[in-house]
Length: 238
Image (cartoon, rainbow, N blue to C red; front, top):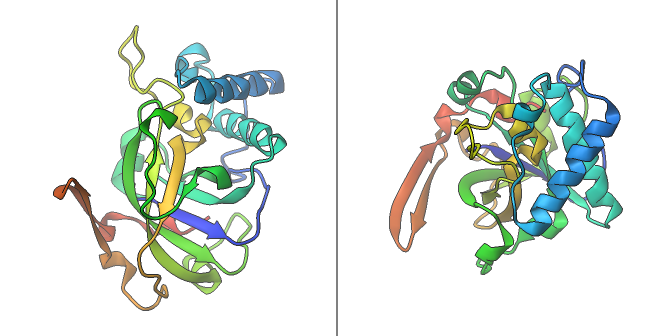
């Protein structure tokens, strides 16, 4: 379970904290080239080779530069930003991938699906589904030190949501069988490919968010359960 933060007004700021963006190693033209590759991979439904293999010197800062270069391509096409994704909100997951902060991605208007929609599988490469909470914001949040209480004050309501994840970069390299790294995932817009929101909205202080649970069913069969108790406060601190 991650978090989706949505705001009624469209926004166009770059993604990534100042800490993350401190020291890119690749030149700008390589960021832009990688972003163009990801754009083409999404259009052709054909993943590219892991950037972390081709550019082992890459840092998380480079990954956010690539993600932001891809964001600019999408904005130039007329897409609009609907919100932000906050991933890797579990401490255990962050420890497993070797990152000490959540990863961030951008939600676009053309990837928002209505509750109950039939979503064509052919729109994606290797889609996966995650159950989420979507925080509908009544005012924007900005700055590197936004805390939990500021997020609650800015939140109009919370609704159940589902995120569609995809891989424009190989999850497993076909030659080396190497798993992609967090650098690849961040470059790939934190793996976001779509989202839908639905269900009954509730105020963030109506329930103890630590105990919000979810069941994911396929054809009536429970295939996954999750409890938010396992999610750290970093899921809200952007």
